Length: 143
Image 1: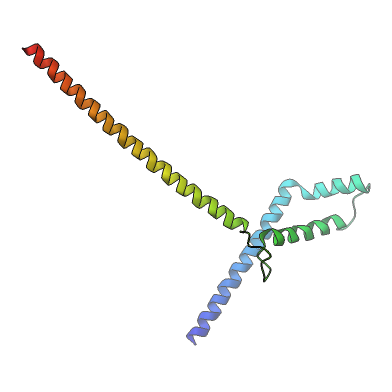
Image 2: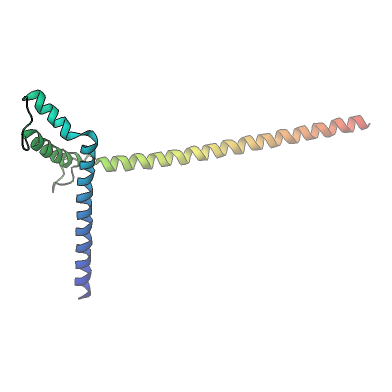
């Protein structure tokens, strides 16, 4: 009974996450379309091409919607059972870039710290030489 409850809980969580992602993605696309004024853009295209705006949804909206969905599916290459290529996904490329940037930054910080240590040790040696020269000058004046 406990295993069954656990399986139901996992299924429910997965379904809830899927629903949130689905509607969140849809909202993001709609907000983008609102920002660029897609309705006005389509109206302008219809007016320039056919001379008037259609009363209902036209072929432009349908083609755009299908093309958007197909583009997402093809670009991310995640929804087929068999991958066509061994190319990394865009997310994998970005994660790889991020990891490389972190490694480069750590290396630059290490090099800078090492340079500072070398400069500080060189300054310490120069400071000791200056102190010794000062002592010698003072001793010579005292004689």
